[in-house]
Length: 64
Image (cartoon, rainbow, N blue to C red):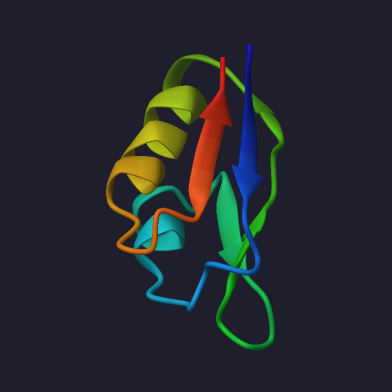
């Protein structure tokens, strides 16, 4: 199982993560990413990885 983290200090709300992985990420009232599912595997892990890889601020990390 993989744990998903968003660094709130780095996130500026580009929205790529919650566009690519809406089952894993959502936005708060300011448009910044929040994690909906902290522990992921399978398809959700693949979606979380896409969010991580496409974050221009590198605010998302996956702990395997």
